[in-house]
Amino acid sequence: MKTLIIGATGYVGSRIAQTFLSHGSETYGLARNDKNKEALSAAGITPFEGDLAAVSKLAGRLDGFDTLVFAATIPFEDEQKTISEVLGAFAKPGRSLIFISGSGVVSTPARDGAWNDYTAAEDSPYPFEPMRNRKVRLVTEKLISDAASSGLRSFILRPPLIWGHAGSIQVPQLFESARKTGSVCYLGQGLNLYSHIHVDDVALVSRLAFEKGTPGSIYHLVAGEVNFRSIAEAIGEVTGCPTRSLSYEEAVELWGAAWVDLGLAVNSRVRSPKTRTDLGWTPTHVDLIEDIRNGSYKQAYDAAMKSGYLQSYSWGAHG
Ligand SMILES: NC(=O)c1ccc[n+]([C@@H]2O[C@H](COP(=O)([O-])OP(=O)(O)OC[C@H]3O[C@@H](n4cnc5c(N)ncnc54)[C@H](OP(=O)(O)O)[C@@H]3O)[C@@H](O)[C@H]2O)c1
Image 1 (cartoon, rainbow, N blue to C red):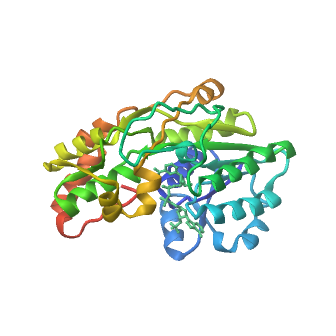
Image 2: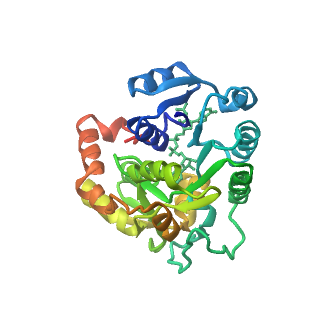
């Protein structure tokens, strides 16, 4: 089997690439520059030159692959055009496509950091107006799901907050708030919830979907859920900083509107009954808070402190 991982140099894609490699797939990673090529080769992944900015060229070169994993981060409008072109070239019987989406498509706003009781299973109706550009991603998901009718084994994975190996989008931002302001910041009441999943479980479910998934399915990936105030308190223990509630306006000033609206000022609560039943999966890592207090995040913080974190260190997505 020959697999191409698009996004193989990223936080999520790099773990998926290792999982496919260790299960016997001839594994390639899309590389858009020399730095990517070096990183992929060092990780045992064969670089495949190409850039999503020139997707037409890339789409014409996908014929040798049986399986495609799309784990790149590009603007959702571009993502939709890219996926349309890729499907046009790649959607043929017997081939597989795994698309890493996110629980953001079924989030609900929480600018005051309040709790909300809506949780979405894979096939739940979403009785709200989708937020901002998530409408676009929902259409992209539908294109992928519908492509199963042409014989493509297509799967959509919706991870919520991804953590582990000191990576993630949200957790490092809260560490950064302590570095920038002296307090670990959260929004409003801090009771809004994000479901979460360890990055190694994202990789595991990607492989299980490929092996035994039902084509056209959406799979949710959930180990548990935690509110932002609890995350902030755990980071406070690690850093020795107090926690502090911010208004929405203060949060935007600190982190920027794009990230606040997508990653912080929301409840993003999902459940995964179909994933567990269809794929026989149970999460292998469940305790995000413990990983902050005593695991990969504390280790990364301690190492960063030794190397001058307070002056210059910026948390990287890869941990
Ligand atoms: N991280 C999370 O907590 C999280 C949660 C839910 C869903 N997701 C979803 O998971 C996916 C991957 O996220 P991530 O956190 O792994 O992102 P990431 O670490 O930022 O990695 C993004 C990847 O996309 C590649 N890429 C970006 N533009 C490209 C282009 N023009 N051509 C080729 N490759 C390009 C990057 O390559 P370079 O190395 O060259 O930049 C990199 O490999 C996204 O769809 C995201 O929505 C992530």
